[in-house]
Each structure stands twice: as C-alpha cells, then as structure tokens.
Length: 281
Image (cartoon, rainbow, N blue to C red; front, side):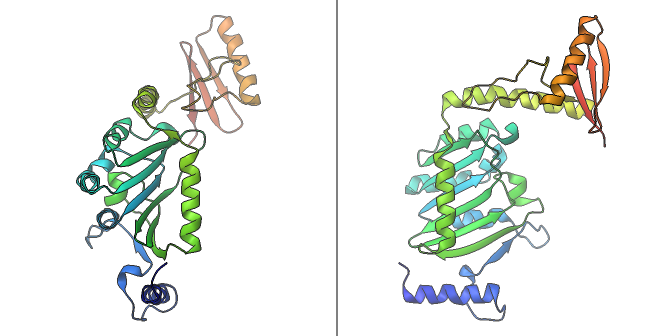
C-alpha cells in the first residue's frame, strides 16, 4: 500500500493532468502524451528505456515485434538480465508480421517469458512497469519496432497508479488472461513459424512487385492448413466456393486464363493455374 505522502503526490499530479495544468505537482506522476518528434528531440523509446531502467518487473503486450525493435532495447535488456529483473512479453501472429529473428533474440534472455497469441488477432500496444507499490502504464499506438518507438507519428498515453488502483488492476488482469491463453515461444515453435513467416514475406513481395494478391484456395474444397498451434484454418466462404467452382470448370476445359468480377469490386485473374486477386483502388 502506497504511503499517504505518495498517494497525495499522485493525486496532485492527476489533478494537474486532468483538472488544472497550472496545479503544482510532481512531473513523474503526471499523465503524459508520449510522441516521436525529431525537432523536439522526443522519442517514445526514451520513455520505455527510462521505465525499464527503473522498474522491478515489466510486462509488454504488443501486436508486432521486429528485430530492429529488439536491437534498440538490447543493451537495456542485458542490464535488466544482469540485475535479475524479470519480464513477460506477449505478441501476436496477426498477419504473420512479427519477425522470428526478433523472437529468437528475446529467447536468449533467461529473465524474459515470451509468448505469442495465435488464435485471435491481438492488436494491443501496452507497456507496464512495476516499481515497489507503483505502476506506470504506457498505452497507445507504438508496437515494439524501431520506427514505432523512434520515428513514426504515434500517440501514447502514460499514466501512473498505485498497486490498488482499479485501472492497473484491470490492465494486469487483461494481460495475464492474454498471456495465459497464448502459446509459449520455444525453438520448436519458432521452426514452424519461421516457415510461415518466410512464405508470407515471399507472397508480400510478390504482391508489391506485381500488385497481385495470391488467393490461396485452389478448389472449392481446398483449405489452407497450418499447424493448429500456429494458425486457425482458412476456408472459402459460400460466395467464394461458388466462384471457385466455376473456375474449376474452366480448368477442366483446359483453359489456363480466366477473369472473375466480384460484387465487391475485386477482379480475380487465373494465369497458368494460379489464382490472384486484384482489389480496385
């Protein structure tokens, strides 16, 4: 339980942040908007590093992690490991964007528990830091990537709380529930995910170069199957089943080209047996 003095300091700071900006209070407890602003020398990264250097424990819940995002925190994370400061990080397999190289680097730290959400599209960006009976919470738009922490136009709010505050209680509860329902990242899991990540990257590059999106279903009965621990099954909907059935008939006639216009304005082109989708701009 926070001391009466600390509680009053927090109350004063909240008053400054939410009631009257001219109210005198401790800056470290005031609610703040964290931005990346090159001209003003501001980076979300600086706040994250400062919190890490002064915490007893940390919790990250982010949608995406890149290798560059880990590298900018590498020295700080090494210091935390040497001090025995433990942390939990949960990310998402959403869009298969998170870099397996970044996950492998994080696995090197014995003080960090690492997990991935694979059965739903986690899109949170939250950083929690515990120090004695205090918590600092940073929530907004910054993922664990170098650009999001240093360059991009991002909005993040930082608030402080005692360990008895309802906001931090709800946040920790949500984090633990997400962490509990996620998959532990280990080398065996990473080997499987690495294959999916590379395939997804190849397809993305193909889309960028040719402005074509690969449509994975090859017949009305086909499903995109991946290890159930990595990604749910993807199968065509009723409209797509009917369309793919028509395409299959074209193939049976020996044709290697076809064009399909859908109600959503998408054009589907079949070239040499491969199916592509072009979305109207």
